[in-house]
Length: 287
Image 1: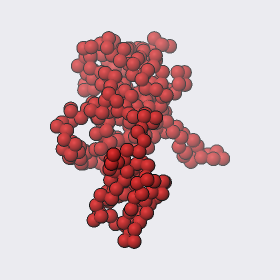
Image 2: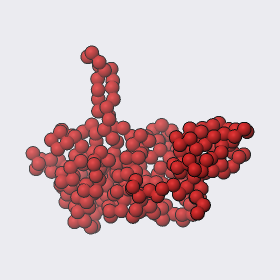
Image 3: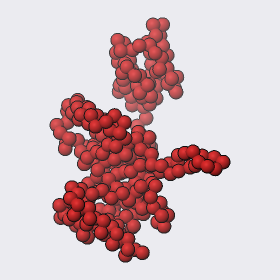
Image 4: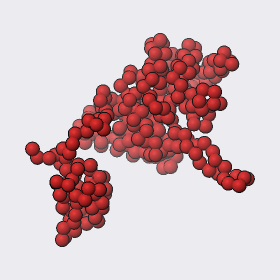
């Protein structure tokens, strides 16, 4: 069976190359695929993933890039990327990398003929999987394998985060399906303004800028070094959203403007996120 699988992967690769493909992406991680033999998602198995990639790379045209689509549905992405890198390093003259990540396996329902609706496995994408993709990229972005970022990016800032974590490019699917291809111009414009604001000279300079330590572990978060503050009264519309502070650190004065009790404020920044007019900001505590 394994020999037949190998022949199938290699035969299909040669057919696509002969047909004039400029690049080929192989999905090793479709939630709806797999026969259950090695898990429904092949890319959850580092050894099997490496074996399939090696089959392809053995006969791959070096001028046609290959991407192998992995999954964020793993307890740790590090061993998967390590196994992939070991294979790709054996073929230094061939262009290849990974797509990280894919849609996430979830359950949906559709009308059926039974006593209840039929449950079906669906791949969830969009902003619901964005934090999962971020974490996968944070772990894999500094491991020396080219990554095409995928799974959850819905605007230019999401894409910038992908690039900062180490992705070499970013794929969009849900976004243009919803808004049409014209959204690409908005993405390019937004990214350009963001780079200018952050004083980053180019997209190439942005790639991997958050590495090699993109994550602060929970236990390493410093205790209360910032507190919230009213940045601009003119922007405040007295909506009271900020008073939803879980630490009861914010109240409205007689004119409806927020006042912050610095002793109660824990620096969580929830109020700043809730302030849709950008009237609040986080400021450093005074020594």
